[in-house]
Image (cartoon, rainbow, N blue to C red; front, side):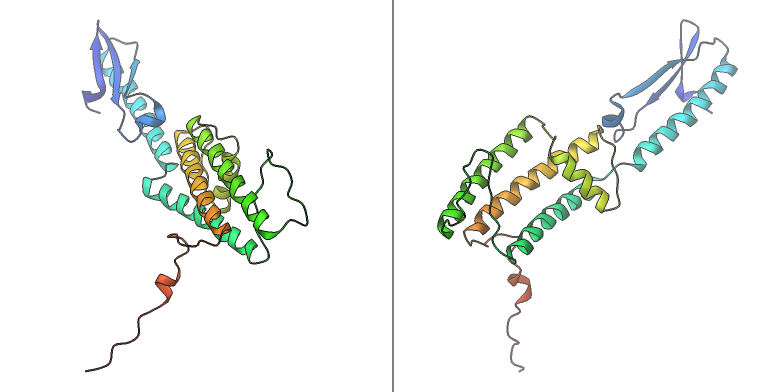
Length: 210
């Protein structure tokens, strides 16, 4: 190997390597420094060569588990659509209603309007709760749903990693978005970019041939 990763200070050789920019957030440092504990240049090169090999293997290992921003966006988009489609499927079997622990139970004989109003209030409370969790980085609930969703996709991500935290934040944002859409769906409003399926299925009439 060349001497590019060797540095000599007070007669002692050191191994020095700059961390690639995409790896920095996962290792939390920009350079690797390590004393080789030798004053012999030949011995230093041998030791540094081994360190270089293991360091590059470490970078490869980190990169093998990384998700690109595009992949994260796709996962979050899939999660959002999965939640909204599941809610609509359940709604096709009856009415999806929302409740929170702070609400009194809706009477079994309550009229439809009362149920709808209670659901809208509950959705608002759930949205505010999710916003507070996002602000506080509280992923105690969403991480369980994320892990289940990732597993269903046949993927994995290390808990405690920067990636896992980023995914939790993005999935929590998607959860807030889904609640906003569901709040409108409860009152019959389907004017959102996820439910405008007719925009893509209805085709304009064919133009008469000249």
